Image 1 (cartoon, helix red, strand yellow):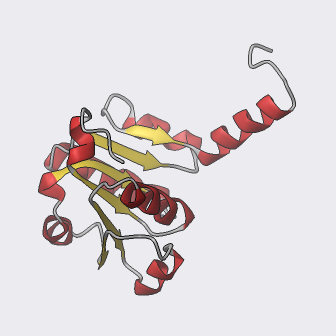
Image 2 (cartoon, rainbow, N blue to C red; image 1 turned 90 degrees about the vertical axis):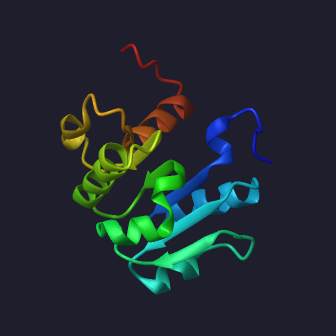
Length: 146
């Protein structure tokens, strides 16, 4: 269940992009009792969701500010942007953080060279490739100091 002491867990969580990451995180959040809205511009993307997902799904383009407002971004405490396109993720993350002042914005980027665009914005960035390399480093028991 959601931690009642965490103020963000009591607010709406929005996930943009219903690929493997987005659908998995949305399902995890809804299974934890957190209110989730999942947005994807392709209706078939929602087929990836687990049958246990209890949140909302909205077929819309997250680059459309009216769609974001209709989905409840003004009430969102957390937005995760995980489309398959780095430039879309950067733009939607900036919209969420700057225009709607969402407290916690997380974006997934594949190209580590684009990190500079989000420097000092307060947007958290995750890189699947970096996470995978670190996992292999642990498996192979290689020190990160070397």
